[in-house]
Length: 356
Image (cartoon, helix red, strand yellow):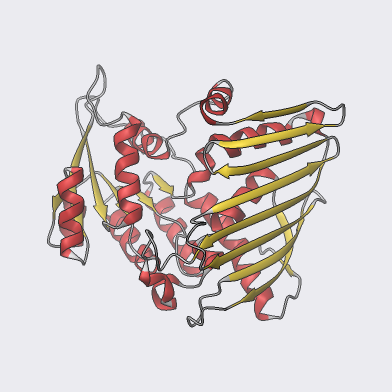
């Protein structure tokens, strides 16, 4: 990884121009990395490709990218590329980007299975390219503050965690990702496609998972697309935990999480907005606290380096030639746990150890 020249703008391309690509494009705009400044040449919106030409054109008209006729043309136009396609395309496109020596931001999950995710992590490591994945909650002030509270010695040991994640099935509403009903493109359902975020946050908040038991269900009837997953965890620390993940049809609930962490002397609750909380806590001495919104973001900024904007941090990492976070290696660990969970569900909830 080599740092780029300070007078050389960073050219950014997009493969895929749907909802998640739009999210990252807007996030880049908000991050402040696009404008040139002393010692920083800014960024250039390069090519975008989507098999739906009208969608690519709409994305380009708003973002300033140039519509390209092929994936190859996008890769030839940029220094860093966002892979925001359906999941089954990630492996191929990341390999093509790494072969060109491009920095790559790949949406989560990395691949439709552990084998693909493992190979993708290997490919970017061998190519030596900056890589980051869309596990964006690693930059969330709410989860960063919760982790700060949990790891505080005053909290005592973590004993257990209760994690609930519910969302209307994203083939409808403003998500309208109809491909998520196709196992050949999505790989699986709510556990892989959505709750890989939750698995990553369980690792971040509580620690490594030793073993897991999982049951899944399919109420919508899409082949291979589970819409409920319920799991029980044993962490290497000795803590336990549960996760319930559900895709329902209640369009009033687009994506909502509630996390309760019980430490020996502190309870921590994350709810509401994934980014700005509130985060609440209750201590054994009766002390209670709540932070949300800008006050929460300010509290986190006081003890961490970098921005809470994952896209700005990706661009800064590429420009500096340093590793980005969270990278494919972090995502691979979440994939290992998800793989064990699916093995458990296939065995009617058998306890599965996490493969090293």
